[in-house]
Amino acid sequence: MPYQKIPCMLMRGGTSKGPFFDMRDLPENEDARNRLLLRVMGSPDAMQIDGLGGAQTVTSKVVMVQPSSRPGIDVDYLFAQIDIGQAIVDTSPPCGNMMAGVGPFAIERGLVAAQGEETRVMIYNINTRAKIEAIVRTPAGVVKYEGDTQISGVPGSAAPIILNLFDQVGAKTGKMFPTGSPVDTIQGYEVSLIDIGTVMMLAKASDFNLKGTEKADHFENHPEIVQTLLNMRLEVGEGMGLGDVADSVLPKMALLSPPTEGGAIRSQYFTPSQLHPSHAVSGAIGISTAFSTDDTVANRLKAKDFASNPVRVEHPSGHIDIELDIEQKNDQWLLHKAGVIRTANKLMDGFVFIPDSLA
Image (tube, rainbow, N blue to C red):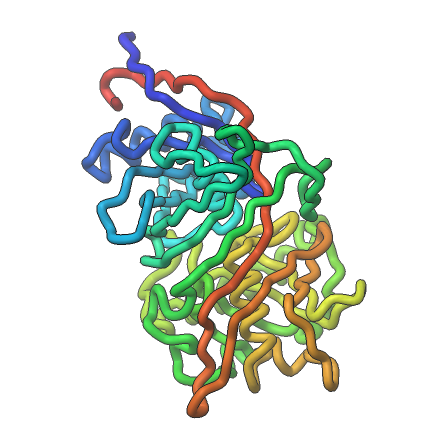
């Protein structure tokens, strides 16, 4: 069977991993592009044995980048979550972890010129219509991946990548609180429904008889907990104006609890049917903002007189710190910017081979 080869760079971005493409090398037609990406990742198949996917949600992701024509923007970035067991390519969510690789990839591919010891890359996230500033180490005009920065969920250390994220409120629904209320009741549980960083349903772990420190095996052994959350998620999707979300990863879900390691709050983040081994950046932005605003489920877990910026969100692998530029004005909370430090690594640079019928 004749094959075509498509340039591809395999990268770790934050606590996730997947292939990065120049979007111009992929089909313009969305259906054709989706078929190609499914073949690249080896989906649908539980092991993704015939593709680059790693058979976990955090390793079944694709990034597509292209030069931008938008004023003040260097590159446009489109993220795709590839379902493992079904032929679904979901471009509705963002991925702040994979976003950490966009700046280095753009420089490596010559889409952005290195500017000295550090290079500033302005990114437009097509998924959420948001702007991101990435600051990448580029001594001698070359991306530096080695460094002393450690992030929870990744072994070893690497060079820091600073991400400043703008336009983080209301990307999907137009509102911080899509229902107009910081707290709603869904199937008997109090939840906060937010559209900050990503669309999420926040609930208290204690309402599900959980301490908040349980790991993935606990939920595997108690699937009724996850099923309850998934049933609530379907109702929440309709209530947030997202329609039927059965085939979408949005809204995401998080169970919140008091911190155990000196942070601000603890989160068990679902993707949505599995517990995330660490935490999504977009989800941490939403939780830290909800923690800092009045009357949300997250805010109600705030210790008296607790004041912290960055907001440290604890998770199963450690923690993630979110720096917020937030203010209350005329009884409205305004999130101007969220900052986070991530790392990335170039793992492979070469080609993927695709049958001519899909390329």
